[in-house]
Amino acid sequence: MGRLTDKVTVVTGAGAGIGRAIATTCHDEGAIVVVTDLDGEAAARVAAELDALDALGGSRAVSYAVDVTDRASVQAMVNGVVTAYGRIDVLVNNAGWDLAIPFVQSEPDFWAKVIAVNYVGVLHTCREILPVMIEAGGGHVVNLSSDAGRVGSSGEAVYSGAKGAIIAFSKAIAREVARHGINVNVVCPGPTDTALFNSLGGDNPKLREGLTRAIPFRRLATPADIAAAVAFFASDEASYLTGQTLSVSGGLTMS
Image 1 (cartoon, rainbow, N blue to C red):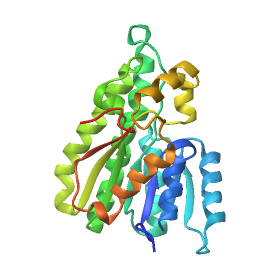
Image 2: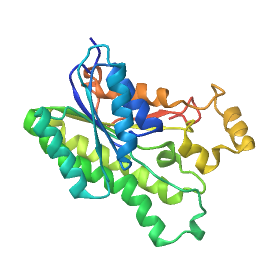
Image 3: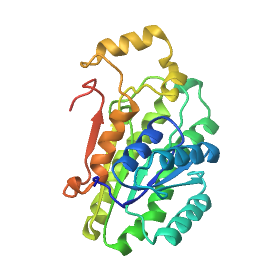
Image 4: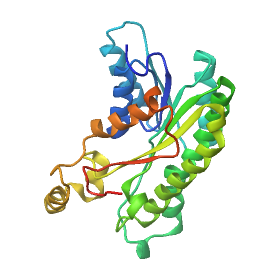
């Protein structure tokens, strides 16, 4: 039996990268995984892969095409999950997006998209799912921020601000919902070997080499490294932890 056996677990941005790893790890821990992504086909592929690997038989993964920036899209997913399973035990807010660009070269439409995907999407899912958890008498929320939200990242000013907002928001709602048996924690990935990281310059050999040298463990994080931290916060092992922020950066940042 895994740490998340039969826990209905919603993961946003789960069609690839860190989100896919989180969905896989939660599934391995026994969860019923709701794989959501803006790319509905990618979400469906991940859910099908999880079902194919399921040694327990049956189906413990479903998929939804969800635009976290659209509250109606989030509501439709939540309604579908609650109708099917009667509850949501775990929410993992992983969906994110960015482009590396100096702030003085950026424009308001870019700011709006970064804030909508990375921060407003978290507001939408929490607003729709927290009442479900309150009615059930408990739950776990794990919000993915970034070390950029803790210490800043050159070329990612708006992204850093949005990710910092997630940390502050998570601490505030952790105080609000603890009385209902709900904990809210934050995982902050450091440089992680994903397609998104490569699109932000991580495919540059000099940048990759420099970051690797700066990290005490001398390697980038893998999506599985991040997923392990998320699974811990999603489990009952973390039931007395709330409002906490965990950096998974191989020691690149320490506090």
